[in-house]
Length: 129
Image 1 (cartoon, one colour):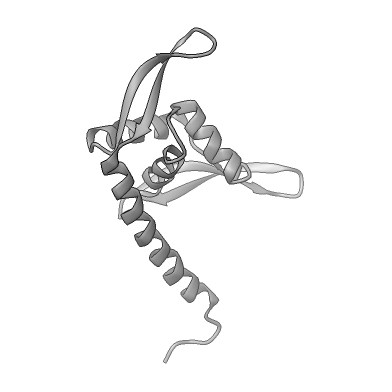
Image 2 (tube, helix red, strand yellow):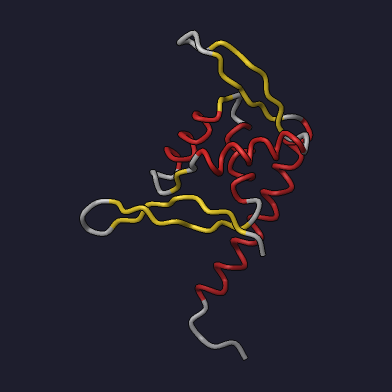
């Protein structure tokens, strides 16, 4: 099974310590698709939204984020265009395509089934027969 690493933060009593987490293939893609479902954004904003929404538990580095955005673009799930930001800098803005919205819906269903299945195993206190 292919995995992709991102940094997660865990509390150690003295604050938060970085801990690399290997995500199942597609998890980062799903997070990006969901983030872009709220509207167009540049890469840094996508990473910040994921960080903010997870209470800074997940942090997506540039080395994972931009290859994922390019992969999603190649698949036709995301499209990009260059725009001038409020600070007068050129920035690449990504937006979800119709195909990307369909993929998000399919992936969300699959992910929910996966999470439910793992939760059942973790909650089981007795050995199965």
